[in-house]
Structure formats: structure tokens, C-alpha cells
Image (cartoon, rainbow, N blue to C red):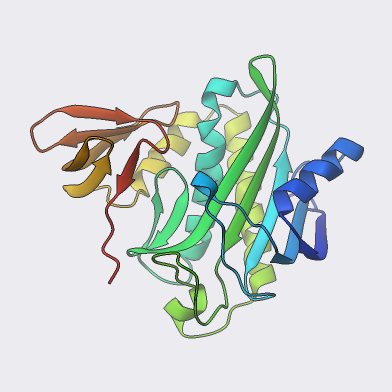
Length: 248
């Protein structure tokens, strides 16, 4: 594992924006990570904001330069980030999974969100910044987010956030090495085995309404492939379908 440069900042609007601006100004080593105590405008998928108390959680972004990876395979970067986090959290409790495309869940509750922003050169990815929020030591949540949970709430005790961060980055580095070697099938298989609701029929909703289906696969481009109760195969891009959750 290379020595990772962790840049600590007290506050920023978004660690992704901060790291992106830094990369524009200077040559930044791969896996350089910006870690913030607080984000004023943390962003999630679909434009959602991310609630995190100051200094209680992990709010970080890291940069990769996967110039060997075609843009059409960019979903692999999402897979390695989510696998690294899910597998690190597995050390603390059972019940973690990856909710497609890349949220990390504990049972029916969300512990981590990931936002990946890629820059392209031609048909290849020149730079990839992954922004990640993991709820570590927060005791309670007050925003309108439907189902947040922290590692402290799961385990009943405070955790060392920085050692968790370093372990996650170690795992990202290992998965990135696999990606470089072209071991994409192994990555995809592990991702599929880690999926939230990967077994059985579950409720979903799309623009046509609610339906019940099971996950039968993830396409290499990242599409979710479902088989509904009538035996029809359905294929969805990000944001085209939502899980109906049990928010009890």
C-alpha cells in the first residue's frame, strides 16, 4: 500500500470540489484524500444533501487517474469504492450491503453515500474523484433523510474514524490494483454478492408505478436488471427506479 497523503481541513462546501480544485492547480498523487471535519454543502446522488454533525463522521474524497479504463466501464470505479467500504464495515457488524448503485446499507438503513465524478479524455477516464460520507459516531439524525444510521448506533460504541478511513483506502488501493490487472469479473461477482436485497422478490417503483421484482444482474455499464412478478425483464439506468424501503 503506498503512503496515502491525507489532507485534513476543518470545513469546506464539498470535499469533491476542494479536491477537484486542488487537482486543477497542481499534480496530485493518486489516492490523495481530502478529509473534512464538516461540509456545508455535501452532495449526494439526485442532488440530495448529506447530514453530518461536525467531527463525528468520515467526510472524504480521494482521486484516481484510471487512464487505462474506458468510460463505458466507469461503473467499476463505483463497485470498487462501495466494496471497499462495505467490506471494512463488515468487521464491525453483520447486515451490511450495497444498495445499487453505491449506497451502503445496514439492514434497511443508510450508513454511507458515495458520489463519483469522472473526467474523460477521449473515450477513457483521465481522473476520478470519489466523494464519500460514512456515518461513524453520530448519535442522532434530525434531517428529513428517511433512514440514516451510524456505526456507533449499530455497535453501541464510538469508533476510531481515522483508522477506519485508512483501512478503507487500503482496500480501495487493493481493488484498484485488481482493476488495473483486468480482474473485472472478480470485482463484478463480489459486488453482485454484496447487493442489498440480492435474493427474493422486493417492491420497487418506476415512472409507471409500483411493482415487485428480483435482482437478476447488473450490466457492465451499471444498469440494474430486474425480473418482475410477471416474468418480464426490466433494465434501469441510475435514477430510473427506486427501492421501496421499510422505514420503521
